[in-house]
Image (cartoon, rainbow, N blue to C red; front, top):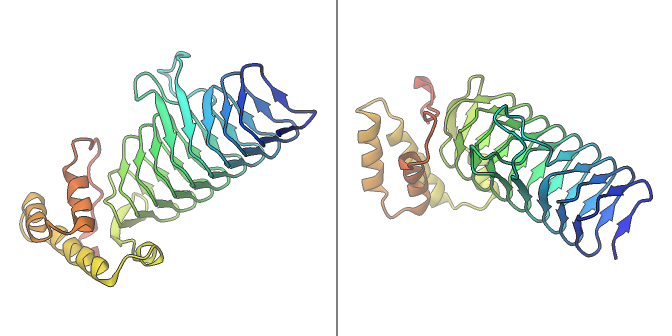
Length: 267
C-alpha cells in the first residue's frame, strides 16, 4: 500500500506502483509513473513524462523531468526514463529529451547520482554508473555501464564515454573517452586505464595485461593513429575487452574527437 504525506501533491493521472512512499511537500505531475517501491523522501519535484523504475529512492530538492535547458525546446512531448534501484541524492536535476535529439533521456538501473549532479536532455546513461557531487553532463552525451564521474567534473555535449571508464574530479572532458580509460585535468587528457575500477570489478590479470598492451600500441608515437588501431585490431581480434576499445573508436556514433593522452603520459 502506498504512503502519501498529507502535504504532498500528486496530480490526477500520475501512475503509482505498489508500496510507493511520497514524503512531505513532494510534487508529482500528471504524466509521471512511479514503479513499485519508489521513495520520494521530501521536497522532491517529478514532472513531465517521467518514469522512475522500481525501488528508486530520491532525496530532498531533486528535480526530475522539468523542461530541458535548451532554447530549441518548445514544449514538445518528450521523456525521462530512470531505471530501477537508482539512488538520486539532494539537488540532482535530470531533464527529458528534445525533438531535435532522441526525444528521450535514459538512465540505467542501479546508478547513483550524488548531490548536485546533472543529466541533461537526450543523454543516455548506462547501468551501475556513479556521478559524484556536482558532476554534470551536457546534452546528447552517451555513457556506457559502470562509468564513474568524479566530483565537479563536466562532460561536453555529444561526447561518449565507454564502459568502465573513470573521469577524475574537476576534469573537463571535451571528447570521447575509450572504454576502461581514465582521464584527468582541465581540459581532460587520457591518463591511462581505469585500473582501480577494473580490479574492483573483477577483471582478470590476463584481461588487464591485454588492455595495457593494447593501450601502449594504440597511443604509441610511431605511425598514424589509424595504423596503430589496425595493428591492435589484428593482434587482439579475439580479445573481447580490447575489441570494446576498437569498436568504440570505429563507431559511426562519434561526434567528438577522441580524448588522447599527453605525449609523456602513454602507459
